[in-house]
Length: 316
Length: 316
Image (cartoon, rainbow over all chains, first blue to last red; front, side, top):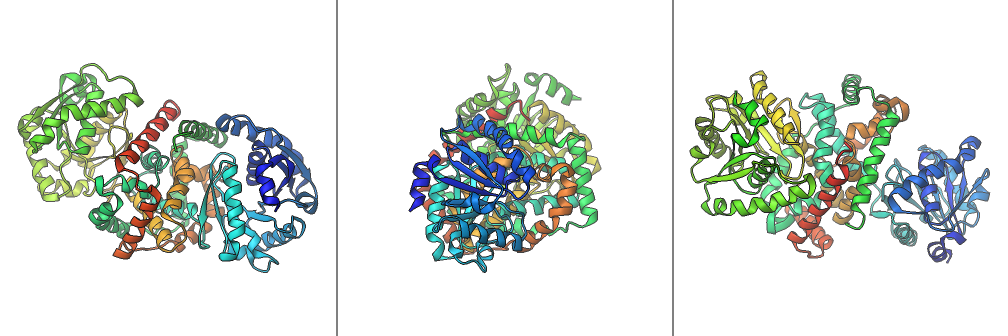
């Protein structure tokens, strides 16, 4: 099996990257930083030509959090998909989110990668079941969904579509663990996987609160950042309730405060993103950001993220 | 007006604390740390007797994040409510979450505090409208809801029930700002205010994901901590989408990805906290925590929280 070798001697065997937009670039930077030989392909020659310099910027961001890059990591760019993935035991696919396109790209990868290769898709929208339709060996194609940006956020959600996927899932789990990522297992295919379902649930109520006039866009954001967001960076929702009910833990919480929780659920909204609502949200966002440049706001967020990750290192 | 004096010379005028359980204790510690003279009352003599020592522990936790306590802060305990709040320009009420009890306590506070005092209720469950029912001057009684623990989490949600509440809201906003808290304004009374509505929305989908078998309790918690939680400690939900759509910002996000967001909303679950579900969640939590002591887990979470708050200081 090549997979052991890939994990144990990362620089000796290539990891494939297909699609080198923002997500593929983040993955490539991470793999190189961790000492892997990365074979990257993108159909856009300009994207491919800019990749070597772009990943250096991203690697510098990784180094600020995770320390110096490991020896042996390097990037090779290929204008042909087949040459890029030829012999790769793991390939990360980052094609645009259109199922027919993804299906075609995944089939091409499977044809040229190692026989027992695992192909992880960065897909946000599709499940492993959908990705596997019409593929020769669907059980080698799994969801491996990062949380943006992939080189700085530890989460990766991996999932197959049944028992046949176990070897691929097991390999991916070990592979991502060895990279220092935090894999979670999507046990059953679900629209939006795990994190984006939870984010969507929160966002729906955020939109509801603003559209009902309960709070401004700015105050909803500030409430999250200075309240629950701080808590969720230290403990997940279940652990927070487990720790919020004294000695009885989650069982006591659910018994005593479950009815209050259900009453809150019943009161949550079901807004629509119609034109009026969109206008309200955008005007609220403009007030909040005071016209600040998106690149600047993004840089400030990245700085805060790096500071938090450094602060938490060794404390998880 | 006494309120200016309270903010400008904090040690010279008392701030009242009524109810000195976990929430009241956190508030008392924060006020003392910020240099206020705190007059505290609790009907339970044992709670009151233990308060001076308990707030020292909490103040040490504050000092680890916010630096040394300001001069002039001190605690005085009163077995009578009227003596405690007598002459106070601000009183924080932390009685148990039963409306008739809270109403009675709030009326007693209003009778003995300064004529134009502002009374902030730590209530989780009730709105300013409910708290004001039957009160002589409802517009002096506002929601001032902390996020637990009040001495370490910056958020405080303040809200009234109409135009008449403006002076009280304005005062509370300045008072909490001067304390270094992060107030947000609940513009219209709403069950669960802002943060707990958003948390409830996320928790509902977390319960749904576990009860459908999509992921384990442990992996839901890990997905949040290593993914969206990290992001929400650096930026709120609206800013995250604003920064996730390139130069077009939130408007572009809503136009391009709004339909995908709505499709996800349509797929979210509506679970019930019935016995079977509660059993599943508790057994998942037990697996996750591996039987670890609640006090120990809680201490570790507090350590991570302090590390994050320190890392973010000066970066917001």
